Image (cartoon, rainbow, N blue to C red):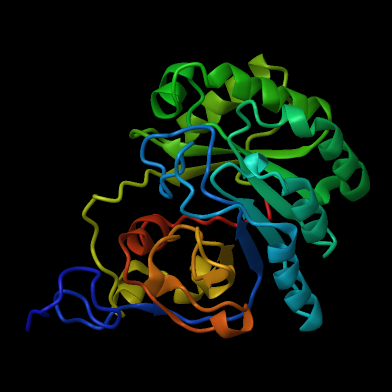
Length: 311
């Protein structure tokens, strides 16, 4: 086999072994994501987007930024299934409540991914008002890396476990639609993880049945990990469909620091790679995506994960 002159992941169309790279066709827009900005109140180990109190590479989105895309959805009568808000930490964005109001105006579920670490208190009254108006359309997924304090704090820092659990208790007591995002930090079966999270919630009197809708465990993301490239033959070998990948039905909006306008990206995981930038409007982003990034293999094709915001 002829070896390509390119290293792994460098060429959009072929792999380092000179094989045709796998791609994902755009089918329809089902989920629209907004990255509220990369600033975060925590600096977690192996954060896929490197969020931290100092990382402002993606600026805070404003209401005007978000409204532009919500209006585009309305003008084209696109039928979204859901909207997702991610970060950084979305509840650090000073515009988060008005952004949520704009998204909720579409009448579809809106999921906010939050670490819930001392960031909800300032918004409690306004969150309660949103819940009163939109009920279960407003959904929060809390990042709880593990059901033990030791492992969770090993990733997120000392003193982060108890405040997060306190926020979970508040959300549950006030009848918010909540779920949990964990991480595969070591080899542990799904059943063991489910039991561990179930026992933790029971201890805190949070009566939530553990299911795929309430607990999502994501594979660990290490940018330096060596994973195989995805070729066109992989779909049949792995018995995986390209149309089941996130970038077939999802797009994400980001605003890079120093740039006047937001951009549309192919994926929630790959925020800094210009090659995955698809333009300034949703319509021009509706194109096929070649899987030339390690996260495409690790997280989606091989990991089988999904950022679906319907849960």
